[in-house]
Amino acid sequence: MKTFGDTRIDLQLDEQRRSETTMHNEKVKTNLEILKRLIHCVIFLGKQELPFRGHDESRESANRDSGVKERFVKFEDVTGKKRAEDVAALALGFLEEHGCMDKLVAQYCDGAAVMASGLNGVQAK
Image 1 (cartoon, rainbow, N blue to C red):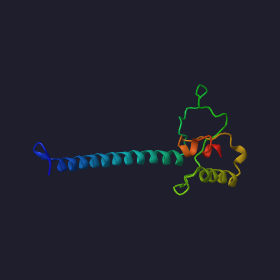
Image 2 (tube, rainbow, N blue to C red):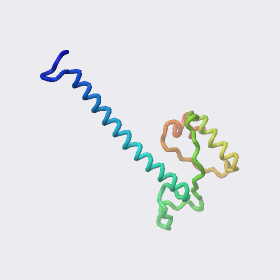
Image 3 (cartoon, rainbow, N blue to C red):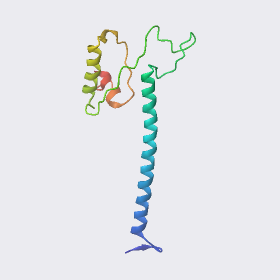
Image 4 (cartoon, one colour):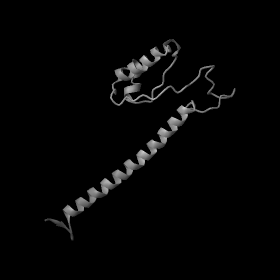
């Protein structure tokens, strides 16, 4: 085996790989904890029918909607339906089912490519 100084190179590479794997696993664990907190916030806001933006709707506030109400409707699992056409069909089907198509004045997308693309994302549908 070749050595670099007093240490074998293969042992150094193994130690480096273990160190990188450990750091990656710690980062994944931290990110999962953050994601759990965000999901809990979304669930709380949904159950309380609270908007994601602020709640100040005084005369001086920029959040005044002129009678427009923002409501949480539901969560929908789209893990098997990731194409823009599928997500758009799901949203449009819900609106049609509940007779809301004529009341829709705007939509908001979170910036994900499948949602926000004006050419072939859900927003374009």
